[in-house]
Length: 389
View 1 (tube, rainbow, N blue to C red):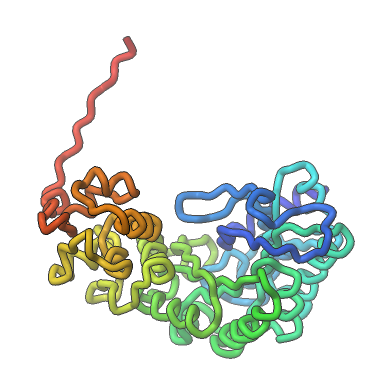
View 2: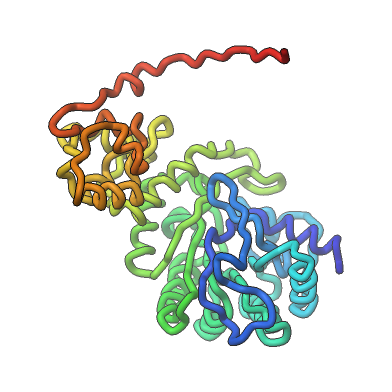
């Protein structure tokens, strides 16, 4: 096993965000190894949703593109290397058999051409599927400008594919790259992926944004996210707060606070799981989300005419707008409400409601349950030194 090459190309892949879930559909009939079901893949997750149980690696860190934020941009003076498809597939199987990894996340720089680099990634996936009969999780990156034929092959082989938009629109792309075409190299392949997905059950599509590199606003990003979900069959969007890389044009740009990344994830969850729309979100004059309050709490604070809601009468739609009530607790609440009328906060707590957050925004049998003093006048935390004795 080429440890030095693996270390270099593994480190080079750290800027790509892994999928957080695996498909339950096997891509190989009667696989000899690898199971895509939940019990067969042991993911580990960081608090912001990154998956850390996959072998995440590049085929090559050689690249012809000039993305201003990227550690692998063509103008950067770094050590370059590549895997061949047989090398990479063999290394993965060795690691899998030793129980170090459960799946593969494979991306690549653009070495000679987009076609050559995509073909090499697809070849590695084919070796895993056909030679080793690996039926587990494979995530393949679709490179900008990939042809429909190569996209169709990738979608057939992978459990998940992703093409990173990085920025929300063409104007922002021009600020970070002079060699990429937003519509031809990014949106057109996204459409091709969307067209192939119905013929490949179990395969999903995601994308990623580099937050702040092009000085875009949260509103721009989330507007594009909504469009991707509606028109391109994108299942999830991932966000990576920009961090400056030495020897790049943006090396002196300030890093983006991780809290901004977190706020975008929270807003994206509201879209997918809480049926919020872009109009429900509160943006500041610069088009960004508030970094002090999360988007759902900000919505409630800025819409006092909607609250408090009577917990024994509110619809599912209304319950999901109450801070402290999520999709699962809202469903439990509705089930219990069919045979029981809630009379106390303790009963709500028993179905999963976060009382501190929810109480200012609800009534129980017409009685208000709390106020926002905890928000506007938070108590200072007191710490006591523990004794060793």
